[in-house]
Image (cartoon, rainbow, N blue to C red; front, side):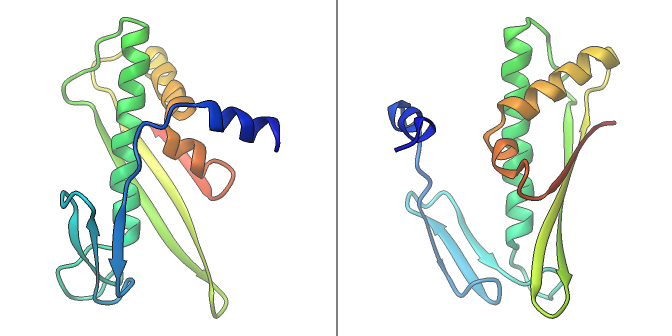
Length: 146
């Protein structure tokens, strides 16, 4: 067992998301064990009413990132503006016949916050957000203060 594995095992488990998915991207569905999430899935750009995994990743990552910035702001006694917004973009790429991969961007808007302070909050969000930690080094990620 590595030191990192031992440390992770000692940490307190806060939550486990349980999702049952059938049908994949094409005419699929995903439902959470508590029923709060119940979505139809579809291929990006295809007609229909379903969402796709890239949209779900963008929504989850941006929501988590905003919460991470909120934690940093509270720690430094900085008020976040009520019109704070994050525009998340997740790209699905294809290289060759079957080499799929992702890239992603967050464009963070903190109106009325001094630019240097806003950048500190964005940087703190990148360090605190579990989604950012998971994505860092595995896909091309850009986080920009706009």
